[in-house]
Amino acid sequence: MALERGTRTLSIGARLTLSTTLITLMVMIVFAAVMNWRLQANFAAEHTRFLEAKAAELQADLSDDGGRPQALIAEIMKETTGTRLREYEARVFAADGKLLGETPGMADTIPASAFPAKDQAGGIRSFAGGSHEWVLTLIRLKGSSRAQDIPVQVALNVSRDAALLKDTQRAMILVLLLLVPVLVLAGRFVSARGLAPLRRIVAAARGVTPVQLSARIPRMPPWPAELEGLVSVFNEMLARLEEAFSRLSRFSADLAHELRTPLSNLSGELEVCLMRPRSAEEYRATLESGLEECRRLGSLIEDLLFMARAEHAEMVPHREHFDGAEAAGWVSAEQALGAARRNVQIALKGDAVVDADPVLFRQVLTNLLSNAIRHAPDGGTVEIEIAALPDGAATIAVHNGGEPIPPQHLPHLFDRFYQVDTARSAGSGRGTGLGLSIVKTIMELHGGDVKIESAQESGTTATLHFPAVRDIK
Image (cartoon, rainbow, N blue to C red):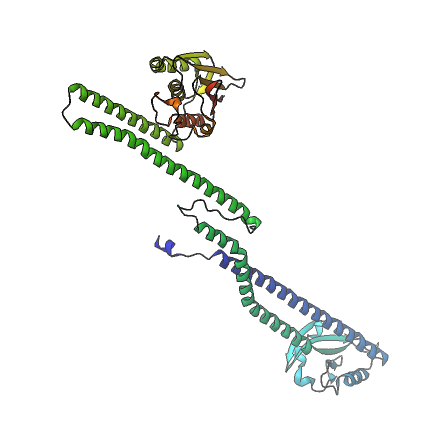
C-alpha cells in the first residue's frame, strides 16, 4: 500500500507531450530511413547503368580495332590519364591472365584481388581505397574470332555519391536530434492549449462550496465539443445536489420545529403541574395530555423512519392481487370512529382488483381518508370511489366537500411537514405534515402516482393510480 501511495502517474499533459513527441519521431525516423534507402537504391541503379554503358562502349572500341587489346588499352589510357578526379579506372588482362595494361597508379589504389573472380563476371562489389569509394566489376569483352575473351576490371569512382549520402545521413540525424526539444516544446504548448478548458472547469468547480451550491460552470466561452457534455452533466449534478441540500436543510429545520413543539408542550405541562400540589384528577389530566404528545412524537418518528427506508431503496413492495373495495371497506371501518366524532359519513362505491402491497395500500388510503375527514364540513360526506381501467390498472378517488385548498398551496402539498394553515383546518386537529409525503412515496414505490384537485364548487379530490402488474402470481 505504501508503494501504491508513493507511485505518481504522469499528467495528461505530460502523456500527450510524450506521445506526440514519440509518434512524430517515429514518423520522422521512418521517413529518413525510406529517404536513405531510396538514395542508396538510386545511386546503385545509376552505378549499374554506368558500368553497363561503359562495358558496351569498351566492347565497341575493341570491335572497331579488330579485337586488338592494345587499341582498347590506348583508349582507356586516353580517358583516365591526366585528370585529377578520374571517373573510372580500368585494368586489362590477356586471355591467359597476363596484365596488359591499367590506369596509372591503379595498382596502388585498387589491387586486382579486390575485383570479382573470373567466374563471377558482371558482379558488382564496393571497395574503399585510400580516400575514395569505388564500385568494382569484371567484364569479359569479345576479342577477335580466333582469340579468347579479354577480361577487363573496371572501377567506378563513387566518392562524390558516397559523400553526398553520408552528408544526407548526418543531416537527417542532426535534424532528428534538434527536433526532439522542438517537439517537446510544441507538445507542451499544444497540450497546455488543449487542456486549458479542463483547467477552467477545475477552477469553476473549486468555487462550488456548501455555502455556494448555486454556482455553475459558465456556458461562455463555448466549450469544445468533447467537454460540452461534461459541463452539462456537471451542472446538472450541481443542480441536483443543490436541490437535495436545500431539501435536507428544510427537512432538518422542519424536523427540529416539529419535535420541539410537542416537547415544549410536554415540558410546559409538567412544569405547571409541579409548581404546586395538584389533585389526582389534575395529575391524571396532565399525564393523559403528556401521553398524547408522546404518541404524536412516536407517530412522527415512525413516519420519518418509513420515508427514510423508502428513499434508500430498503423497502420493496410485496405486490398482490386483491379486492380494492374490501380493503377500502376495512380502512373505512377503522376510520369510522373518527368520522363519527365529526358527524361525517363515509360512502364507498365501485370495485376493482388492485395490484399493490396490501399493507401499504391500506396505509396510503388511511392517510388520505383521515385527511379528508379532518377537513370535511360537519355533517358532510367523504366519498371513496374505486374504478378499474381497461388496461388492468385501478384508481381510488377520495373526495370531501370541505373548504377548497388555495391554488398557491397545491404544488407543495406533498412536501414534508407542509401544512395549509388556514381556517379550513381550525379545530380539526393537527397532523405531522408527513401524511401526503408518505402517500406520494408509497405511490412511487408502486410505479403509480397521486394527484389532488380542489375547487370551490366541488371540494377536494385526491386520486390514486395503481398500474397493473401482469407477472404477479
